[in-house]
Length: 508
RNA sequence: GAUUCCGUAGCUCAGGGGUAGAGCAUCUGACUUUUAAUCAGAGGGUCGUGGGUUCAAAUCCCACCGGGAUCACCA
Image (cartoon, rainbow, N blue to C red; front, side):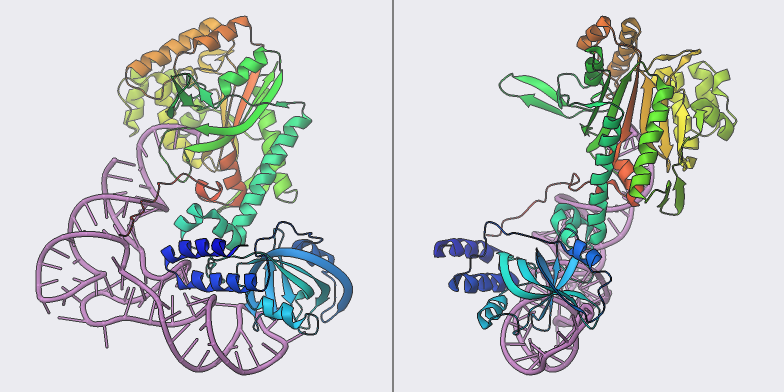
């Protein structure tokens, strides 16, 4: 704690020319002049605020204990000239009482240089005040880190969504709802991982950097490796690598990780998002429906005290399995009266769709027409969980042809709250068929469809060695977290969502 | 990418052509078992940035920067 260090800090703060910062730096100096290290190395915590609140829930108003505890956290507010401090740690909040009867005058003087926002450690005796607040009568108080910036308004917290996204730490310090959301996100991911491990799946990691962006229909990010001097794509899906592992003999694998798609940003889309992809050898898409239900229903129960019901906005969603299973074409038929199973040419399908008022892109194939009508007329009404099954082959280049209909595939998408939250199929294992499907994608690509898939020869070669019958399932973690935390925007469940850089203008 | 709304003190927000406002926070003092503590006083602003209209712009117009929402693409 040399003097020059403080001067450096001061110089930085002067750039901000903020009197609030200057006042806190002055307090920092005052502590240093009294020989206090404002940035110490270690502190032994014995108790957490949330645990103490539970342990002493029945401690009578006005009651005193002889229990000595040591807690640590951030000073959130300060009443009666420092006599009462609200301390917040990772588990909750507890009041600190610092009175001259229990603390030396030197200690009290030191505390007069503490500010709201500082990290402090407190040792003291547990009691409940006559006003009913669980409190620690401090006998020892230490600074664990001096804060030199003012916290946001103590009552309203941070409302400005831009600050909440850019400076998530402030959001987490101030807004308990946000803390709860990210804690719940962590529990959801842990649960899914454990549920899969319990079913003998093996967690694996596959590349983020792909020479060919495959496994999904999406626009990739392109980057470059200098030493190899090759272009690389950030992965749009781990699918093709996970299937290679199944070919290699790992029968049950899963990966929980990020995918990157260079597409629009919306309430439901962030350029990087997290999915779990699961592959199970000797299983088909029917098995994957059961697996999806076990994982998702289980996640809901574990985060909602055993209930399968979740409130989201105005809806109450019940995840209780089994979920209905309806084919995409049947759903469209029910909703619009159009039976696409009887309109098998692209032109007749497109004509029927356009009669129903849906714009169809020129040169759309049959599956694209069905998908467009489904998206426009059906999707929005799928609030309760449902598996939409047997999707058109035209739009499912990695799924096995349906065993009883050659224009469909054994593929399903699970919808909740009108969002697709899972996508699964009986994986295509026929290398000849796979090559044909890729060729159709390449043709679409050459016609200008940037999202059509690329031909992955290396993957086809892998298939030629033999992929057992395999069921694959992908679940969008972010959307699941949104549903289970009543978050209307994906940005509320991603700690640091993608935003534009702030353009900072340097003052002369 | 298109449309639309928003940007005022560290934070939460008023003000919408005529002297820049409040609460919290900060500083000074009082009080010292409070709960968004209270009381008295003080400091704190290039009103996102740059142009324009006007005697006069936070306010009206244009461009740009950043954000929200809707739409398009998508999970």
